[in-house]
Image (cartoon, helix red, strand yellow):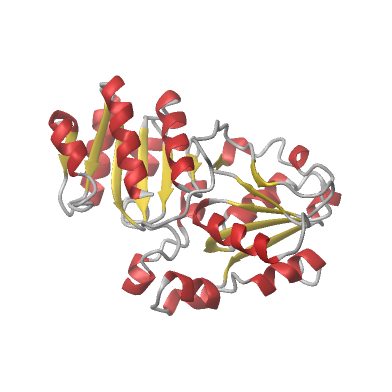
Length: 307
């Protein structure tokens, strides 16, 4: 996803002279092509993420669309006040880019886990969350964000993610993308972010068109309406995320369905168990220990797991 991000950002910067990139002294081996091609629109703010976000907001106030790029939770929790006061409150076109969403940097321990970031960003009015599931969705998110500049959060994986779309899909906030159609009324597995690969793998393990797999790359506080219309009579909706349950994507969907009590009872959430917060290990191992498993999915589909 990192390579797709920088490649697409450079293409967009060619035609849009307001696109700029600010980094916190990292991303090297990835960001150099942008820095070399657009030196006047690239700033290394050093290991000073809060200052980086203030610089991004200042540039945005002068007409730039700034992408502020750092690892995991450093551009979010460390910069929470700057995002709240400088970016979201003033509705400035700053995209906070977090690399290594979920447990992609799990081997580096809890300081690098990004498993509470949705909850934080959801608290800020005016913020649009971009959580692409594959490299093509990364490109599509960037195209939407540059065409619709606003305060936003782009949550990327690390590297090596499989591609499921043949081309960047057309995106609109709150609108699901179907990657694997199912029978009419079949359960829907709705993923956001890096869990899409897991969702597709699980779908292959369930015989026939018994499960519809969808992705929701763009969502946020202002885009909860009409979620119920996309269920299409499905007997079950299972939301999937590599984030803790509290404040996450499943919580957002539960809020969106609150006024539709019958549909609300069909919703189940697959999210990380908080036990993983004190663990160190590979992304795959920690996701497994965090209960993102096929067995957990089957319990959700059958209704054995409570909503």
